[in-house]
Image (cartoon, rainbow, N blue to C red; front, side):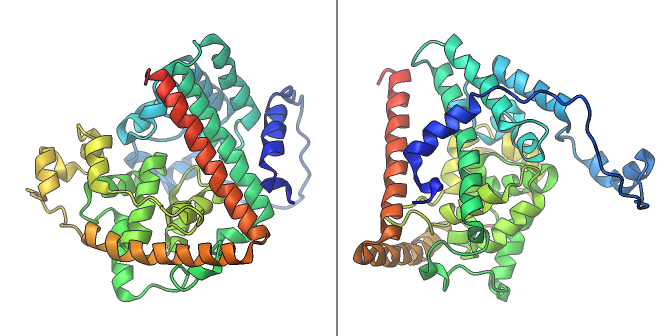
Length: 375
């Protein structure tokens, strides 16, 4: 059995590794003498070349180790509070409710071990079974997922372009889109679907290269399930925009949200952008920020599609496409499930293990949630 599938051992090994001493800062860095003439950009030339981006974006990531450390310190000092619920709210996440360390982690301006140890120290200082402690544990789970996805990608790099199960090949592929699907895809890319929360999220992505996880998942299911566009196209578009783009996480999550993973579970989630608008952006601060043409509209007007601007009407019927395309994906999942159950081979055991791992994690998080809320 491969290392990535030995979850119990990996859990122990992972935490042992993260608790080791940090590597000392090197006194000097030796670089090779390339002996070639490499063109250089001056600061002035750089500013001129990218002036439209530098002048047009008000929310930007600042790079470098110094800023990465400051970002970690501010998260540990106060921003972690409420992380467990704020992380799914796009406006709060944009304002700093999430750690905003993902880009630093991917660019290497800070290490996972530094982040782990910096945040883990909080647990000893926080009351047991408190909401604050739950927030910290939830964030540490996300960090562990990052490394787990990297490990899986190391073992299975083909999953960046290949469906996990071949039964999905006829539905999800990287083939060129026909005219109708290309129109839907273009509207999705530009944030012009007629669904305010989807459009606000996509425009946020296009302008600052980031969105919180819940909005990413919602945009994925809208494109793959409702629009019927393969995850291949969406995953590639995300990677072309995300400042924290990580192919190991991005492409696997696209497959997961598209419904092509964990087939042993008989259900999969399709996010409702209207329900999420009401629940995750009830004051419409996020929508107003990225869709200025909708400022002044009430929630009731947005839900009714009563726009006093040139904002587009919905490009599709969400309920109808969910019913039709969702059924197609559900049937394919059943095909995979039936085959694996009939074969009873290693692939079946891995699928069962993946399902049980997800169920076990959900049960643990549900118990923790009940504990902190006295339920």
